Amino acid sequence: MEKIKIGILREGKMPPDRRVPFTPKQCAMLKNTFGGIELYVQPSAVRSFSDSEYAAEGITLSEDLSGCDVLIGVKEVNISDLIENKKYMFFSHTAKKQKYNRDLLRVILDKKIQLIDYELLKTADHKRIIGFGRFAGIVGAYNALYAYGLKTNLFALKRAKDCADRKEMEAELVKVKFEPKAKIVLTGFGKVGNGAREILDLLPILEVSPSEFLNETYTESVFTHLESSDYYQKKSDKSFEKTEFYQNPELYEATLVEYVQKSEVYISCHFWNNAAPKLLTVEDLKKCTALKVVADISCDIADPIACTLRPSTIADPLYGYNVEGHTEGDWKEENNIVVMAVDNLPTELPKEASEDFGNQLIQGVFSHFLNNDSEGIIFNASETNLEGKLNKKYLFLQDFVDGVLT
Image (cartoon, rainbow, N blue to C red):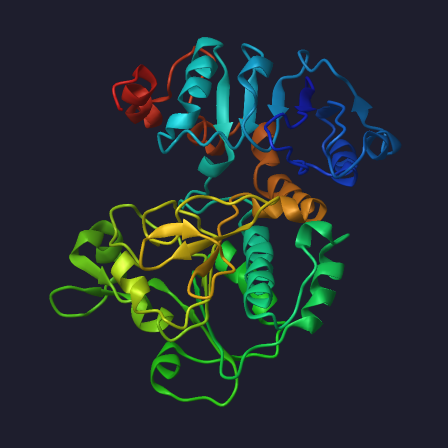
């Protein structure tokens, strides 16, 4: 069998991303386990793993990856770096018609590139195969506590990005102190929400049911973990039917404010459909007089959660939200809510996030490259083909490519 040549790209998007699709040890394991693979790594000065670590595992370093069949990165590849007639796999952020990447998709088509998007890799029952969601939740929940400590002046955590690894980050949690009877709300039970739970479960805080959270009085700090049925109800009769909600979300209304107005911290890890009702409106937030921190890990800008006015950055992760003016302000101001809306959280723990991601790739994707994609997993995640056309499943993007949408 002819070997598949795989090139691991140097991340070129700014600000620099230190994550990798495969760690050096995972590269070595791939070479040893799958005899049909050759691996080449493009040198990089910004990766969390050094070039010498790849070389020590016997992996070839090569600036020129034009001889590779499949080129793999993490974030969007710079347009100027794209090589025609190749298969690429990365997060392209184009399938939802993101305007800022329209030119990227156009050039991918012009260069007759097969774009395999991580976000679109799904099992036969439509479940996402890979992603950085777990580590987004882990770092996002930690950042929520970091923000809470600063806002209340109760404690000061070291930034996650400044910790050597997750072990050091978690050791910082012994510093966490809560105000008397503080309450935290967490939404979302996917990989992101469960990742956030990993941090909350390390704290001296009691978990209570949604009903208890709303109706009971506690002498200690508590949190509750909500799923969509807890904060959406049908307008007509206040019921909830999952299938109907996902098919016809406009029939429902949000009740999340009932929980958040009783809380000091809200951690958002849910998936939100833009056809669904908004979760926290400007008027809702005016009722949340105890609320100090919103850690919007989902980071849907200026839509479901009114105070998420923009994404924040790892360099500057916090901003303030002025409730009365619906404007950005200084988070240190007493009446302003602290918003943490970093949209690339996993890169604060790049080594562990990369290892977790690489394991998902190996377990869920690589066999499909070697068995000619017999189940269509790769094909179904390919927005474009080597003929310079959108695949049938993604023809809905044609008007976006053509610039019809404004």
